[in-house]
Amino acid sequence: MIYAILTVLFTASFVISPAFTTFTGFESNQLPIPQIDPPIQPAGYAFSIWGLIYAWLVVSAVFGVWKRSDDPAWDKARPYLIASLVIGTPWLFVATQSAILATVMIIAMAVTAIMALLRAPAFDQWWFRVPVGIYAGWLTAASFVSIGSTMAGYGVVFGSLGWAYIGIVGALVVGLTVYSQRPAPEYLLTIVWALVGIIVANQGGEQTVLWLAQGGIAALVIVMIWSGLSARSSRASPYA
Image 1 (cartoon, helix red, strand yellow):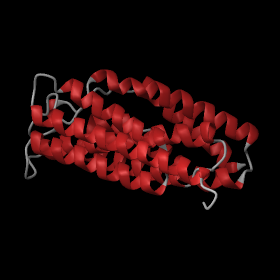
Image 2 (cartoon, helix red, strand yellow):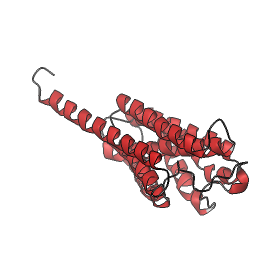
Image 3 (cartoon, one colour):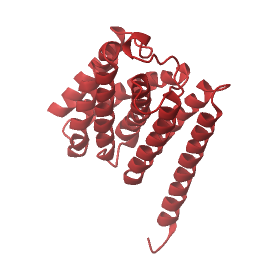
């Protein structure tokens, strides 16, 4: 019961936090090398996915405390989701103060959200796994956006273009690794959403970023289709 209640409380604090802080990206004075529209950053419209994430997490938390308050399968994943929400509640404020600390925090948010996804119950997929999968998928992409922007902003080895390549490849590697452990299409589809946003943001810009993002989308879609066909074949086989 306590995990269910904490999930509701910290989901509420996480969802309410944008009302107190406005954040549209790291300001030029937060980084030694200002990052104005870095190529790793998706177009602004892509961030509207937060509306879906907030709403679905609230629905999940309320359903959980109402119908699954003492369910051990839900409780297996809840501590990790709670940890992610606790870190996420002050994240917007921190992001206006320190790009480095914000990057560390969003990585921690992503890691704990992924751990919650990996432990999500096999049943109640639409009530728990799907909203957490979308949340974890967006945080996976957002972590690499933050890493790329911050590293380029401090001039670490590469410029913004090099860190865009690293960020896209990094998100693909992490995404496919997580999917291999827990085939959750909503998780990869959210990363696809972020990659589409990167493509839109770079129209008329650096073509290699477009090609890499397009190749990444193709790879993710192929993996999802192959995984779906393999699962269907296994269920149909009398020897499975």
